[in-house]
Length: 100
Image (tube, rainbow, N blue to C red):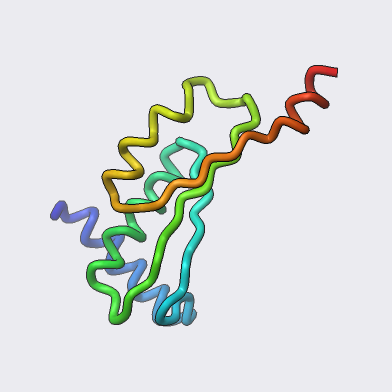
């Protein structure tokens, strides 16, 4: 594990404990836009899950509103390779409003 990754995981662990962010059996939804922030958070939570004192579930959620520069489906294999469920929904109502 890279030193920077270890530092991030250590900081996440301290924050999780200090602020009681997680409890046994929690299911965390991570809003994934495809950008570096949301993907880094997802990666961090996947890695932290291996060292957490109890199990918790993760789900990645993406709301496609036609704003992504690249097809968001390109992330599917990456997200699934992390062992995380991915929920992708299209916001067709907003797309219609934008077109009008």
